[in-house]
Each structure stands twice: as C-alpha cells, then as structure tokens.
Image (cartoon, rainbow, N blue to C red; front, top):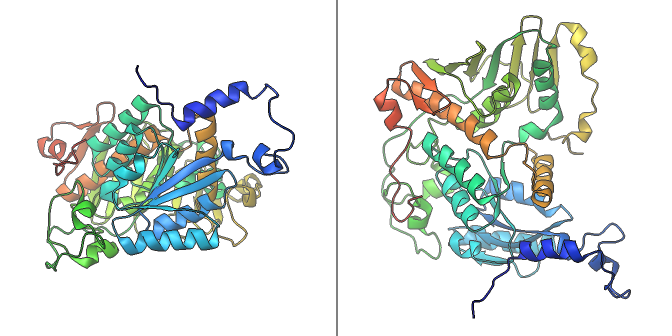
Amino acid sequence: MAKTVFSRRDILKAASVTATISLVPTFLPAAILGRDGKTSPSNKITLGIIGVGGRGWHDLKRFLTQPDVQFLAACDVQRERRENCRNRVEKDYGVKNCGLYRDFRELLERKDMDAVLIATGDHWHAHASIYAAQAGKDVYSEKPCAITIDLCRQLAGTIKRYGIVFQGGTQRRSLGNFKTAVDLARNGKLGKLKEVHAATYYLNVIYDWLPAQPLPNPNDIDWDLWLGPSPWRPYNEKYVKGGWRAHYDFDSGAKFHDWAAHTVDLCQWAVGADGSAPVKYWSDNHILYGLYENGVKLVSRPSGWMGLGNCAVRFEGENGWVETGDSGQIAVSPDSLRSELTKDFSIYGKRSDGTHGEDPESHIRNFIDCVKTRELPVCNADVVCSTHIACHAAALSWLLKRELLFDPKNNTFINDQQANRLKTRAWREPWIV
C-alpha cells in the first residue's frame, strides 16, 4: 500500500480547517492555545539558518525576538561558527536542542522546518535558495540573490515554480525614511523625475589566487563545501574569514552589489521599474550610469553625498530633490517639501537604539507575515532579481570598459556576444542547477 507523507505545512492547513470544532479540552495551558498574548506552537514558523557569519547572526537575532518563530537548527561549514551559534541561542534565547549541520542539504531534509535564513557568502545564495525551494522551504536570503544574470532568472523561476515565499535581504524597502523618499518621487512631489542616484563602494576586482595553505580538517572547515559551485582554488584562511570579497569567483561583480543591491533597488522602486532594468549602461572611472526606457538616468557613485549615512539615495526631479541614508535623516529641496515629512519613523522600522538601515527587523516581520498568509513580500524574487540583474549589467559595463545596450524583457545584451557570455558562469559539479 502506498504511503502518504504529509508535511508540517499540510498538517497546519488541515488544522486550520478543523479549528472551529470545539474538541480542545479546557485544561490546556493558555500558551498552547495562543492566549494571553502568547503564540501557540502550531502557529509558530520553524526556522533554520544556513551560514552563521556576522551578517547571519545579525539577522538571526531579529528572528529570535519574534514570538511566532521557533528556531531549530544552524548550518555552517565552519565548526566554530555553528557551535557558537548553538551556544548563544541556547543560553541567550532559551532555544532547546539546537541541531547542528555542516552540510545544508541535511538541514533541508528536516520535515519539521518551514523556512530558512540564508546568509552564506554571495556565491552560495542562489544555489542554496534553489535547493531550499525544491525542499519546500520558504527563504529569507541575504543579498545579492545570485551572482550572475542567468542565475537571477533561474532563481526567480524556481521560486515561482515551487510556490515558495522568498524575501531578499534588501531591508531598506521596509524602513520609513527610504519609503518616504520613494513616495516623494513616485507621487510627483518632485515633478517629472530626471535622475536617481545610488551610493556604492569604490569598485575593485581580483582575479589572482591567494597563496595556498594546508587544508584544514573538513570537520573544522569544509573547504570543498565552502567553495561549492565556484571553481576550485587552493585553501587560504582569509577567504573563509570574509576576505573573499572582490575575488571574481566569489563576488557578484567588482564589489558593486555590496551597496548597490540596496541602493539601486530603491532607485528601481522610485522609477517604477520593478521587474525591469535600464536599457543602456556606461561608466566613468568608479561612477556607473544607466538609462531607463522612460529617460530617467541612474547614477551609481561612491562619493559626493551629504553625509546622511551609508547606502544613501537621491532622487531628482524638475521641481525638487530628496536625499536620505541610513541615519534616517531626510534632506529636501525646496523647503515646501518639508511639510511632506510628517511620518513618525519609529513605527517604520527604527529601533529604540536608534539604528536604521542596518536593522532588518521590520523586513523580517514582513517575511514572517507572508509565510503565514502566502502573500508576496516587499522584496519578493521578481523584485530582487530584476534589481540585481540591473546591478550585474552595470558592473559588466565597468568590467568590459564599454557601453552596453540591454533588453530587460529578454535579459540579453544587444549585439555584444562577450557580455552575453558573461551572463552566466560554469558551476562546479555536483552543484549544477
């Protein structure tokens, strides 16, 4: 006889249908029933993390403060990181029986897990997200979502195919000062939009390998699994300690995505270009330009800002401009626009400790709510992937040192075979997706 296997999500859906039948004994504790402000276990989202570095822990702490999240397990190729995570969550957050995994595929096999937080290095984000989607897990992934144009498209298609809730970790879409700036641009308060500006790093790309060092014990650091889909190269401890950035095999493109994943995303939103991208790209030293089909210019630059915090954006129209950044402060011109700045940003993601752009709590809350409702998060796969495709196209114009024309409907470069070849990379077996 065939055996039917029900997932935890199937059981929860069935339970919600029968919840109206009064079969629950009155002696059950209030916590079990979700009373007295408590979340019942059946309504909790069970979570695991893949990649427990600095950013992973930063995100995880916000998940752990949510009353309707139950943390189950941590995965990292570095034993010290995964054990530190277990010790901290069990001590500081009262988590019991935290599972530890070196190989994320074993974590994804757990039938009691609803969602995963992916905070690995950039070169693993898309592959881990695709594997998670295929395992039926909802995904909160740190940015960038993928390190090539074609992989962005493949990720978005996989998320749609499996019906997974996906949230990209570009949390500034959920913060009040950035939302207000975008509202001014989209609602015509600045007049016809002319330019959108995105803060970025100074660009850098490294093709050379670091000197070879002896391989560590794979139980301590699994170098082969750390490399994953990227080409093989000799081990050097600097890579696994965060020194992989700007190395072409691991980085999305000359360090451009580090901030551009956030700031170009906000520019796309302000222009109304979600799901699309500029149609032309060029560069001048460390400044990258894009031109949207409607004539709005995208300017990605590392300097010349007003000092309103990291990840600044500036939107300029015929009648005025607005600039804001991670400090939460907003500058506008003309002065008459100040009357539009009436929102209390404390209810839009600012925490009591005064942090703004680095804090993902409201963004994580949006993801959790959407896991329950099955609605699209603010940074769903289509939104995030189109932004990161725009970033890849801009970075390629800098790497190739020439103007590129782009068709955002088909995600191809026009009459540039070399640029089109660079839309993808060769993945190392067995990580072919």
